Amino acid sequence: MPPKDVIIAGGGLAGLTCAIHLSHFGLNVLLIEKNAYPKHKVCGEYVSNEVLPYLNSLGFDPFEYGAKKIERLAISSQNGDQIIARLPLGGFGLSRYTFDNALLEKAGSKGVICLKDTVSDISFEGDQFRVETKENPALYAKFVIGAFGKRSLLDQKLDRDFMESKAPFLAAKAHYNGDYPEDLVGLYNFPGGYCGVSNIENNALNLCYIADYAVFKKYKNLKEFREKVIFKNQRIRDIFEQSEMKFDKPLTISQISFVSKPIVEDHVLMCGDSAGMIHPLCGNGMGMAIRSARILSDTILTYFGDQSVSREEIEKAYIRQWNLNFKKRVYTGRILARFFRKDYLSKYLIKILKIYPALLPMIISSTHGKPMKAI
Ligand SMILES: Cc1cc2nc3c(=O)[nH]c(=O)nc-3n(C[C@H](O)[C@H](O)[C@H](O)COP(=O)(O)OP(=O)(O)OC[C@H]3O[C@@H](n4cnc5c(N)ncnc54)[C@H](O)[C@@H]3O)c2cc1C
Image 1 (cartoon, rainbow, N blue to C red):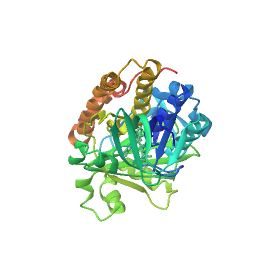
Image 2 (image 1 turned 90 degrees about the horizontal axis):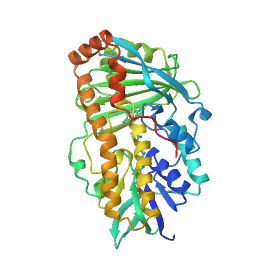
Image 3 (image 1 turned 60 degrees about the vertical axis):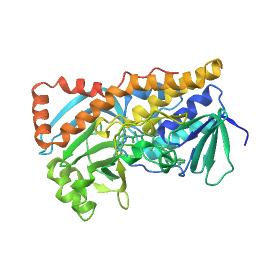
Image 4 (image 1 turned 135 degrees about the vertical axis):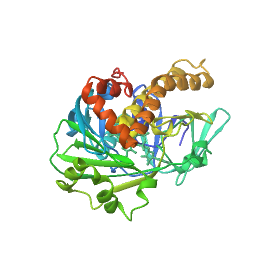
């Protein structure tokens, strides 16, 4: 295959968004994804409207795929005490099964070559990248975007330092038939974690929880963990007990961590969760993945518009923009997650929010950005 302008390793939301954006402006893009589409992913499946104007301008309208409009948030402490507030920007509920696949089709229609293969190594030699995969001969490109998610074997291969630190969370999700207010997204805390509830297309309900592995490992399996820990919050017990699972069994992932990562590693430009992850409690990881894809695409396009700009300048500009856009919200997310992990603090916070309800939209806004402009 002749050398590409850009090779994207990983075809989740970050990779697919970069592929559509860059190909829209005429770049020659190859996207490599190890899994076949469509595929379910462990995710809360609530997407902030922060990204909606931008997605629309890329030619994607979630409501054409049956997304549910979400306008309110319910948040409850471990004892079930809850507050409901209007979301400042609102959002939509759409499964990753549908979302990622729809973006893949959009990328294909823009001329992006999508290869089903696993990237096994990336090296930088003589101002171009060599990308090794499991099944194809070596591929070459001017830029490589690392969009391979929160944790990949590729992180190990690239010798990324964060792989040494603890990854203490696990998560599970499944779709259900259930009755939950359509415009509501719920965050229900339990000891060592929280469960997100969101309506998605086809009148399904997505129930997704993330938990501290140290708490989980005391129990034999997910069922026992649900009954003995998650159901301590009566509200989430009621939702589970009144819903019927559509999957054969829940989908699970482990080794989740929220440590900081370098944004550029051996000249590979990291995007989405590969660059950094906000705590899912903030419900904005997908928003961040899509926004970082836009920032990165705009930065790469400046190089192709004016080749007197050096690679070093491109990398510095991207790191600067990433930090400007996300550093503060990732930090706020970490503090919030710590607050909700402690029962007494979460009770106290809900009490304060009940007295001063205007505080909740302010907290939510601090973990989100302004609506993204169209391209
Ligand atoms: C429990 C949980 C709940 C969440 N809930 C929400 C929510 O409600 N709202 C929200 O906005 N965010 C949520 N998030 C965050 C959100 O899921 C992520 O931020 C988002 O998926 C990041 O997209 P991405 O494209 O960076 O990574 P991913 O979507 O993970 O995509 C990475 C892709 O790279 C591929 N890949 C990996 N290695 C290779 C390789 N070597 N070669 C080729 N391909 C490879 C993978 O197969 C995958 O498809 C949640 C996260 C978790 C863990």
